Image 1 (spheres, one colour):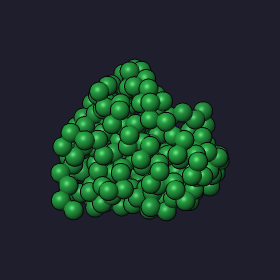
Image 2 (tube, one colour; image 1 turned 45 degrees about the vertical axis):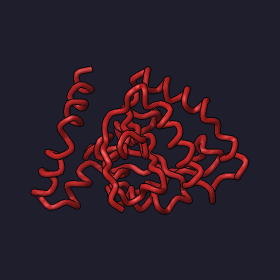
Image 3 (cartoon, helix red, strand yellow; image 1 turned 180 degrees about the horizontal axis):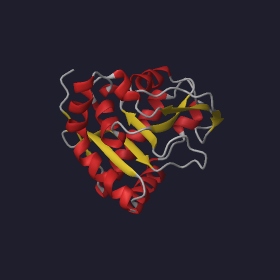
Image 4 (tube, one colour; image 1 turned 180 degrees about the vertical axis):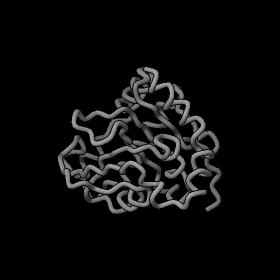
Length: 195
């Protein structure tokens, strides 16, 4: 495919691009899960305003994947939204345009947003592509299923166990992986520990 993808922390000026990807990715990924009228009714101006608010508040870390200057994916992570969270960090969302599947954008976003930390996420039960991606990265459904604001679609919780990547990566590979993607991530982790 030949994509030149870069991943960086989101800026306030990225709100519109993130919102555009959010809507398009939902329409691509959930066409078989959500009613057409729900997907057609997604409003770009409302979503842009919501992303502008999220970026301004600063409680959620947001990263964008870019092809040139165009946002083609995003990921968000935080300390978690659930009172009974199985891990201290939640991958709140990660979306990449279907045209950029296989480009490395999704992996780059996951690496930037949570690195090798133990974390958890919620994923639509009927989304095999996403489930396979998360399994490759150490996440596994733990049997908790609920309905989230994804138009009533069942979602499953998938935590990544402590040390899960260390268990699947050979010794030197994990050290190389952490050194490649963990510098900025480590800085964020240390600042969270001081808070």
